[in-house]
Length: 134
Ligand SMILES: [Fe+2]
Ligand SMILES: [Fe+2]
Picture (cartoon, rainbow, N blue to C red):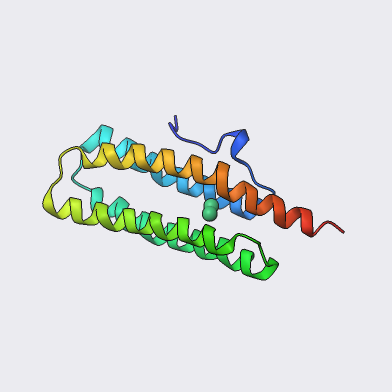
């Protein structure tokens, strides 16, 4: 059973964005089962997958914000950049062998993703949906 998932309260008004968020949770689940099964030896694979997919997801959101003229685009982009920086810092911690890195990553990712969706993504897509009602 998947430990992390896109709960009902995390939906936005954009189906494609929800699908991408579900994929972000899929990566977090991969990390969780990997830690249970084989420990931290394949952490670099998860980090690569995260960088790749989060980059894709953030670009999708940012393109929508620009297309629809979302009012807090800059602030939202700054949140995405700070996530990307954190992932880079995990990369460095992997190189220096920080203990418990996998579990630290897991709690950061779950917490960040849920908080970001609840406080930033829903706000953005609510505004966009509201301004584009016919
Ligand atoms: Fe998002
Ligand atoms: Fe976002």
